Length: 89
Image (cartoon, rainbow, N blue to C red; front, side):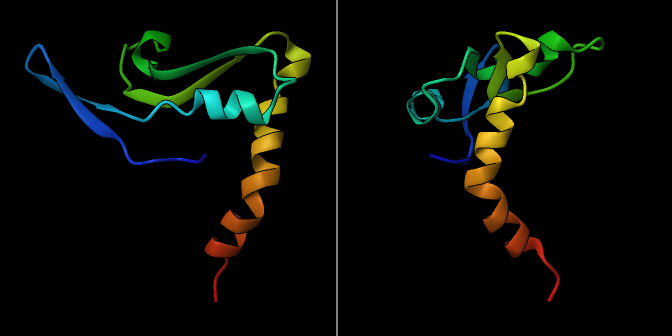
């Protein structure tokens, strides 16, 4: 599980970046997660100017109280390694 490099698909003369679907891995790692996980969701559908490429995973929590569950779980797994990798030497 983790972020992966985007691939490309072609359609209507445009190339669109796509990512491998990691939503099954996320759901298996966090069985208490309530909400929707969508793979390769276009962010353009969510913005006023209709701009934005695909998100590898878009999480929509079932309720406001659960909105921090996914970031907290992901951070527990990845933040230490990410922060130590980006620390200045």
